[in-house]
Image 1 (cartoon, rainbow, N blue to C red):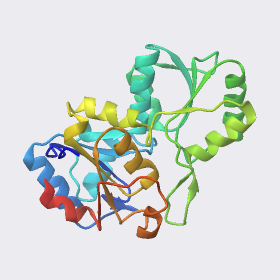
Image 2: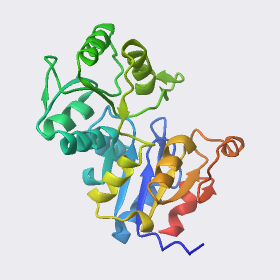
Image 3: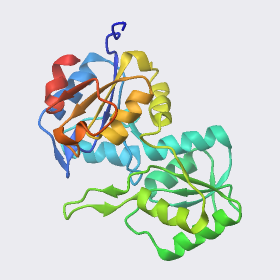
Length: 259
């Protein structure tokens, strides 16, 4: 096999890699600081579509992590980019929060429940039976079904929460229609992110804490992959997957010297 080219650009997941339940993971501040000083292109990614990039910038800054707005890439932004490419100036019925609705407004989409081109499902903490019923009826009426990410659960201080993938499964059961997921592990999210910072997959690396989303997406996008053990995946679980990351490290702190 040929040697991999040196890493010139970095993509990193947020939850489980840089922060855990609202607290920075040791080494995250040094990693971001060194990235910024190096001038290398980088992105912080999240499958969570609740917050805008501006919201996340402010939240990370309060934790001591100074990530510019333009270096944050969410599944909501990836979804909006996909829809803008597929059907510019379209219409959508949206179940989600400001991160998703703002992204769609910014590409010129009209949000409506009257014969929309798409039903777009994102993360929210206030899923309503009425909204899901409307989504089911619109999809049955011909609207195309899009979802920001396939994660079935999300973290909270009290334990796991039902997430977009779980609600998508409910709508699929009621309609017989599978959604198109724009977020990880879809390599589309990585490729659009790389394009946004002018980077190339063969000289880029993806850092994540999940084998089934971060590592898989990075691998399918043609990048080197680093798995950290500060999030959801345990060393025992790694062996169950038919693919492996390029390298396994204890935490983001172990990658500071790689920049």
